[in-house]
Length: 467
Image 1 (cartoon, helix red, strand yellow):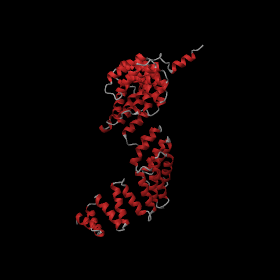
Image 2 (cartoon, rainbow, N blue to C red):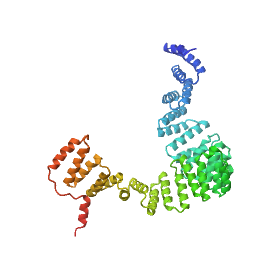
Image 3 (cartoon, helix red, strand yellow):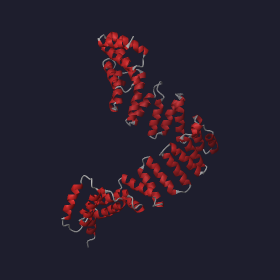
Image 4 (cartoon, one colour):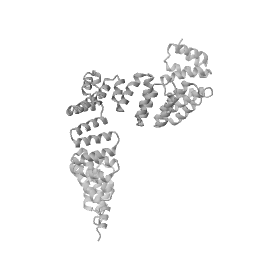
């Protein structure tokens, strides 16, 4: 019994003998993918589709994304088992991320079976596919249909509860997990998620009744105002628990309730080390600052909280409230300028970039934004003013120097335009457009130029100032 003998039979087209030799080798090495692939191939050649299907199915146990195997299985079952044909076609479409096609395949598979096990497995996959597509309603419908059967995966209840939570239907999520809990279906998986839902639904007493998690019990006790018992649980937590972010958030809550705010902040900082940029960090800080009557920092942290949660409009409002209390915080002014710009409020954004340029006269980013804005509305004189300030802070920026020259040229300010074109040629000796700029400067120096042309803003102001 050797691989060489089997390969020799195969080379001599003695496929039946090769097949038998490979089977002997497979019995000794059932995880050898090369052997399994050869057996599947030879079984197909010999017309033994049933055994070929077995071997191809074994390949999927090791490599569930093997498209060739799905295609082979589809060929095998196309005329003999339409249920399996659509199942494998659906799986193929799934791994290709063609979810709409996969959904249609699994729906067709359902129409080709009456076996309960097949129906359960297919509906479970269908529900998962709908969820991946973001169609929560149809995913929920599929999971609900599964609840009519007895032997269903425990994940059915958990997945359905998650979908209800995504739809803000907390009572429905609780109801689903309660059904599983009463049936004692995989209690270790159901118990803690259900306890968490009770707590979320402001029912800490029910959560306490079923949870086995000491940290969750401490959370329930804190919610009920029993700080003494809560602290005992936290103090006696094992070392592994004390290294979790959940532990530090509970300690922060405990110290907050006890009005020990410095310790609360310390606990929040420990939490933040483990959960970087979590909205809970900013929420806990905001609440603590509020309790200290520090409105400025409370607004700052509520703003950060809403930024992380994607609520930019609310964040802007919080930051504006903070700005009313303190208008010289460079970080706050920068954040407001950028946020307002991102949200499309260009004019308001420029007010804060202007403020930033006053707080930090050498802030080139603010000066660039202001210059770009003035150019966009035709206020070329103001654009040049900002470009000059920018130049004072960044004199080796040859792109800026060239822009200044071009801006002064637009304003028909020949002396300033010539001055900056010359400066450009001094610092940009390796620039691709060096010769072109040099030629342009020569023409400009020999060109008569009228007085400065009015920009759009100047013209508008002059128009409205007419008698």
